[in-house]
View 1: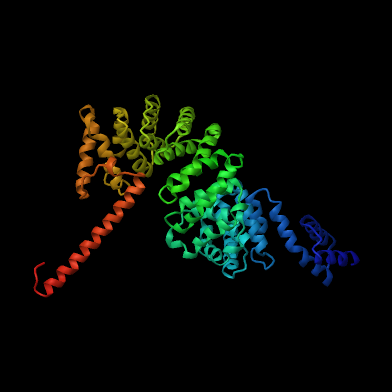
View 2: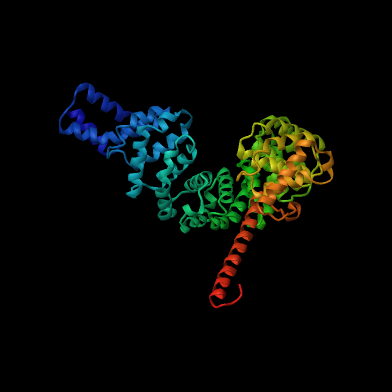
Length: 491
């Protein structure tokens, strides 16, 4: 009894760690300790036991199973919630689909939802939850139901977020590809928090934030206001190797996406280009493709740019079998935009496209193949085997909604021109089908090379805007005609 009393006093004073708490619970069970003082001791150490269970977990499946009984207990508090989310993200490779979609996970999600709606969650738990949901977005989609409540917490607790919290939240929101309808206008206030805490961000966090802002620029345009401050900080850190090459590659990609929103972005790029060239061997194919695409989109010129692209293409040659079709499309687009004709490299690209085309899923085929074909055509480099492979893959998909207007025009432009007579029977038939589809969609001919700026996305956005303007005019004329008809006027 005296030992139990002493331990209860230490627990009350918060002098016991998690492992000691677990030992106490085990000992009480073995010794069959009972009584009011023992109950007080166990109630005091129980939260510590939960914390230790979470902290010491090495497998996500085992942790969720061990916590199953605690999810419905009032002992499971906001600190446990934050720690559980954090561990789930870190241990994601050990989370099985069965557990991710199982009853225990459902209990955890229900408990989290209750705590979020009761506003009993702090900024740390909110940031950890966002990060884990984005990290586990494929294997545990049921976690997404917590997003509306999390966005509400960010709205009211913006100023409580630390630099790390802000970086994690924005990365998660961008990764989850949330849309403007999901955001409250106050979400843009995070730009003020970024500016206020700019000096607290690490180099890698700055790169992550810039990428996040670029990814969200259409849904949360107010965030762009923070980019100039972030770029100032990046210039200070980029040459100290605090930002790794992968981070710098995302910064360069972001600069291309934000080129019209942050004109001063280009001023900070020389140090980024130089550092990227020095670390080029550490980059994966996606980064290499993004570098070429960004340099072309930004129309960067000069010795630093030439040195970086030459080094990038050299690395890309050795890693070409690892490139996805999207990566190949980005490479082709960048080379086309910068008017760089490397015949040897283009031949390797062509062969890789021919190899991949037949096995592409419908979405990739509809988006990437037209871009590749148009890019080759704009460089004056046509390939009969590649055009044959593309026409075979897309001939049965021309009426698909996945194949948008830009893709149709891009394909038509790639298959027409001076080399038309050199096309085989298959590609010629494909071109005829393309023209029929363009006509069936009532599309007016357009020359992409004279209207294009940033590629399919930007082109579609402008066309969509024009389409809505025409629709508004037609609606207005229609209304006027009806009004005139009622008055006996000519329609």
